[in-house]
Length: 387
Image (tube, rainbow, N blue to C red; front, side, top):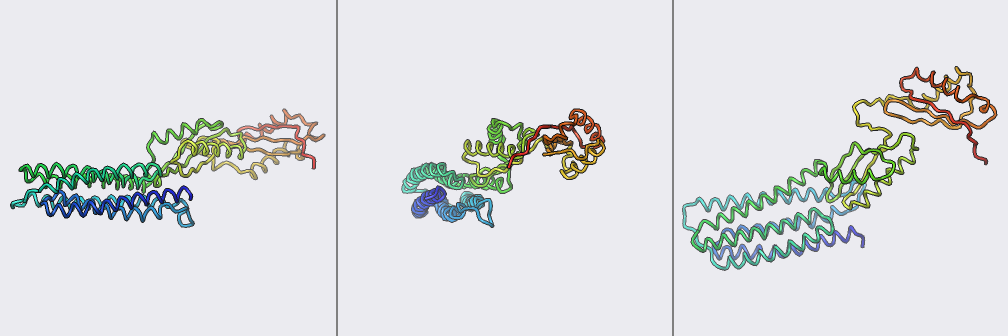
């Protein structure tokens, strides 16, 4: 079984276990809340049944969020998990609002309120222990499979334990003669639920709008990259999260005289280092630069391309009296606003008769009429490979 399928199976299993417990607790709380005259326990029961709805939602979302990338979703399906978390948070806020509204009506109604009875205390105590147990189990699974949705669902269970504690003391206070304390406890439970719902929703919304990762996290990534030999700087660093994964884009600056293949290999080394060091990284896009293109002035896109430079070179060679110069390779090194030229000359009898220093100086002088020119170097002695 693949790791993805194993994680999906674990997530679904713990969610189903939690849903069974939520169903049992929800029914017990509502039934005994009505029999024991505790509006706080009834409110807590509604909270538990709302957990059942979110558990079903979580199971459904997990099924899709762990699917492999396809043509329609080349980045994968992790955002389904994020959207599910937003929905879960909104459901919690809605449930909290309804609970608070009903409890406040009870507080302000001028009528005699029946005091809660001892069964409400027993059920509240059972709920505290049951929800704390499922919280710890779910959180362990969520961290093991690195699922924000499962971790969020675990903390959702922890709020049930907290709310049951509030209900316990509210019922106990009401039984002691403070009749309104039960309704106040129900409002407190609603506020707890609303806070959790808001936190889940806001965090997921930040992810959906591609909010950057925390600065300390991106700095940790940068520190690892700068340890790779050949990288001079990291800039244009962009980051975002998708579910439990971090997605990165960056520009890596290397020395201007490296070959394209060496520069790309250095970038691959940086990616391998990051993937090895940080398990949360899902995908990295990098661009190799030979200069820092984040600076204000950038004339690089106006520099001539190879065919234009070759044309100018042959015109200038005509002027120097060497139109038949044997050239084996023309290397161009693009700087921020200029181009360096290197000529590798064939080791031929004709080239051996040329004063290379003088020709290099003459070409340097002639090239300077072009604003994009930086320098030129001539190298002699190339022997073509024998076939």
